[in-house]
Image (cartoon, rainbow, N blue to C red; front, top):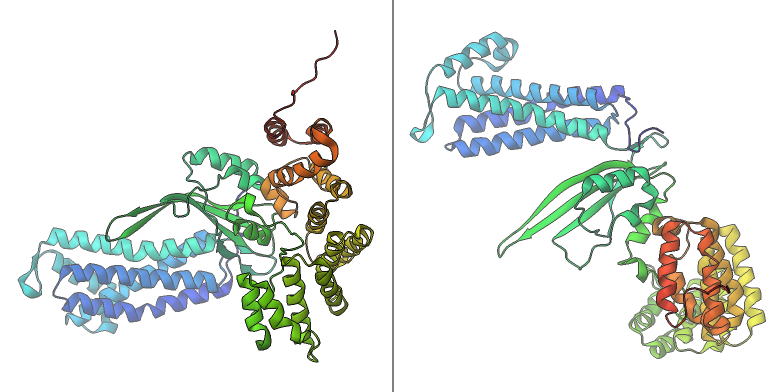
Length: 512
């Protein structure tokens, strides 16, 4: 693929031409209305507002024709939009002259030469308007020229722009646009950023800096377009100007429709929904990524769910426990789930284990198996926990229910909290191998591959490594990664090592 940007296929279905022709007929209605307003309006300013509204209406018709007709040929769709604009402009003139008693509408519509003569006669003389206003012929002609340009160029531009938007040829549908929920830092040097993104689009989140502040006045917004193939993005610089009475937003395009090869659009959206990369959730025995409440929760458990959400775990248990033996499956399973969560939050691991086991019997999922394994670790039965984690990973390999590293990091966290950091080391080495095997630490790439961010791994693993290996061997454990990482990874790791092992010398002096 030569271009890093989306390129329309150049297809112009017959339905797009038919819809454009129908649109040219449809604009006769607003053309008549516009003509009537310009004849009867007492204010010239109102005429200009009416002209803009008419142009927008024709632009909307042209854009709808392109979208509904699935036109992917910008040049020809632009020409069809121009034709719609010219048709509306021509019908408006015929209607205007007809309302001014210059002739019948149909006769004028069929005789463009007669319309031209009437127009020239108007241009050669002053025109008296309502409220006594008189307009010089030169001003009148200039207004006509502006009117023609606006009424024809806006439909052309909107129709062409619609045909340039990303279209998925695999599914024969337009790509769905989605504004990423994260705001990025304002781009001061657009050309530099564009060049870097064209060269390495997979490093999107490394190239764009995170935006500081909850409500910035200058930031960068990213729009994602996704379909059946590779997603695309458009980037804009956004500036918000506020005063006491109003707020004005200015948008400046940086790039449009850049291709993101092999990028998982859903994962990218999920990543950007997190406020900062460092705040990505880590699964722990008492805090899971599965949300207990759902839109169709049994009414008997609504109050208990509210208690759990608010952190009132004893009340949640009191409300859910009476229903753990309910005859209705849905009610019973949700009650067991609530008890498992609440007991885990209270640190009652044996009770939580009992409920997680019951939940796995009812719903044998990888997530439930991983929670059973974590609870076994928290109760000190690490052999059982190890077996259940292996079971969870085997189930997950078939279902792809959750990221495999999430199961591993959950168990590492459980072992660490249970005072068994040495048992966590083999699992920690598995996580380390993910980075050395991949060789890069770009957050976008890591996230779409469901691997924890590199900085998160370093910070969360340090207490375990230091407790098991000590400072000297611990530093060596991390240093072994350097040879397998790219330059960015080596720089980040080296800097982190110097900051985390400040009491040690960074090099060993060789004997003479």
